[in-house]
Image 1 (cartoon, rainbow, N blue to C red):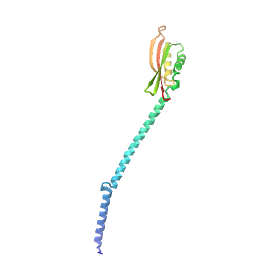
Image 2 (cartoon, rainbow, N blue to C red):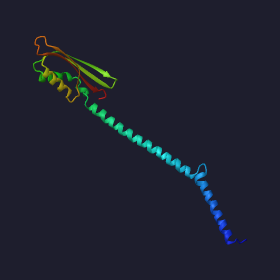
Image 3 (cartoon, helix red, strand yellow):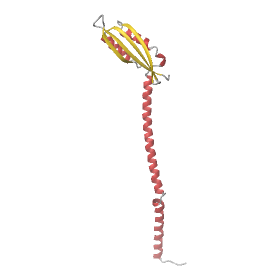
Image 4 (cartoon, rainbow, N blue to C red):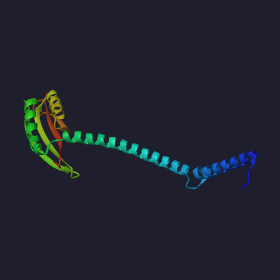
Amino acid sequence: MHKFKPRERITIGVGVVALLALLLAWEVYFRENSRWKQYQAARAQVGAREETLQKMVRFQRQYEQLQSEVDRIRSSMLPREKGAAIQGFLEKTASEKIPSAELVRMGIRTSTIKDLFRETQVVMALEGVSLPEMVEFVFALENYELNLKVKGLKVDLNKRSSDLLDVEFTVSAISDLSD
C-alpha cells in the first residue's frame, strides 16, 4: 500500500470530515423529508393541538357556567305538581297582605313554551286595595321562592272609595315539562 505523507493524511482527513459533515447536513437539514423538517412539522402540530386543547378547555368552562345557570333557573321554576297550587297560594297571600280587598274573579291559563316548559298564568281581580297593600302584595309575589312574576298589572280607581284601587294582576310561573 501506498504510504501518505503526514500533510496528505491531514488533508484527506479534513476532506473526509468535511464530506461527512455535508452528508450529515444533507440528511438532517436539506433533504425533503429530513429530520429537521420532521421536527418542525411535529412542533407545529403540537402547537396546533395545544391551541385546540385550550379552546376546548375554554368552551368546557363556558358550558359548565351555562349549565349551572340553566340548573339555577330550573331549580327556581315552579315544580310541576305545584302548578295547580298557585291559585291557592295567591288567594292565601292576598288574604294576608290585603285583608280589606275583595276577590272579584280569578282565572287560570296554562300554555306550553317550545315543548320544554309550561307557563301557568293566573289573572286575579281585587277590589278595594290601597296602594301600600298593592306594593306589598307584588313584592311578596316577586320574592316568593317559586319564581313567580307579575306579568301584568291593571289599576283603576275604586268606584266606591277614591282612596282605594281596583287591581287586576296577571301572575306567571314557569315549570319544567321534563319533571
